[in-house]
Length: 81
Image (cartoon, rainbow, N blue to C red):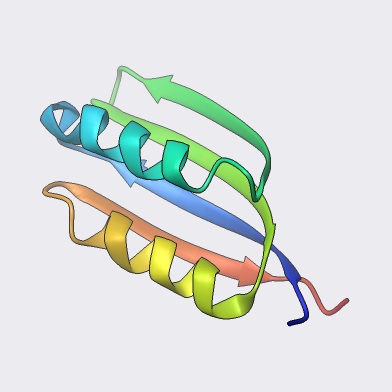
């Protein structure tokens, strides 16, 4: 199948979910190009950006799993290539 490049934006409001989030991202490690995390103490959130190259259904599944975590939200933006 054809792969797509996407950027997944993740906002973590509940740090108790971080271990589960890292486990999920580790499961998709073979598709992840890069990852950047920025803690924002003023608002007590963590912002994570993940760049991924995978089949669209895998990216959607990853976003769905992340979105089910307590206090974590995610959105994917796909490249047109």
